Length: 191
Length: 174
Image (cartoon, rainbow over all chains, first blue to last red; front, side, top):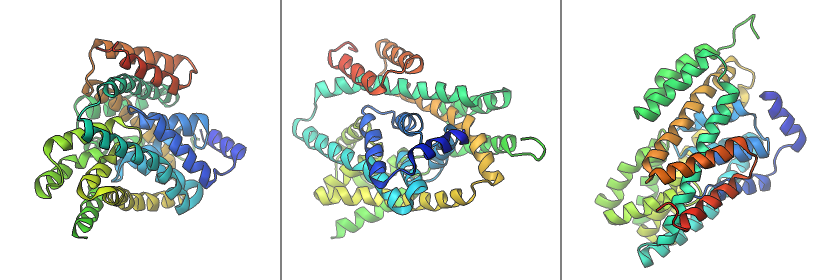
């Protein structure tokens, strides 16, 4: 996966500040109805190839653990990776500026008319597709990293504890995280 | 002036408390902005929550709308900045450490070991979202069809989301 990342970087070079603003704006606007995390992967890993799959996944988990909104954190992380503090600011601006204006516009409409029925219907459909995109992300990334019984067990344990039993994220990570690290710790002698 | 300070302190502290994402501090946000400061009513809080969930962009933008109700447009931008900057600064520091640790065992272990775990979290997100939004059998069918398209074809996802939105608009989802 690291090869893929370096390939992407050598082909495109470091994204400029403007590219960061534009790309995160693209991610944000695509996420109409939800699925922001799946859209981030779709644009950053698949389309732009700024990061490899494993680097992206681990970055997004760290951004979940740290306080703050996950996707804003991910924008800071990726922006800082390429362009330091200005990059982080650019990525956050791209992710939030237009959505802030949209959400304010919607709120003004909402407080004027109290409900916008056709908008709710459109959102209902878009939300069904956003769930599907998140599901597809699990399938596509799973195919690449769930090889062998241990990763499959780690995956299942996380899904069952966090998704089905609704345990808080921190408890789940406190249990599955150390097991994952022990499994993945590089051992001398093996590659 | 006092209200600006309240906005900065409330959302700045919630920023650092929101471990696991913005939704984890919603109860506290509700308590402070509705019951303590009375910037908005219970119903208005529920309404702007729905708007911020559905609108494009991060759902934490609910704070933009609370700031707007509390102190107008300036309050909106103040609340947004207050909720982003403290957590963002922390993420920045961690990302610097991460770049320094490029070839260390801990980074290798996290990148390899957290991948299966993250796939579990992503699937959990899809599961929880699918069950919480008002999904009846028609929505599940639409979700299944869209997932099939995303997994087995290279169609631009935006086209699929737009088509699903159209299906909703036409009333196919009830």
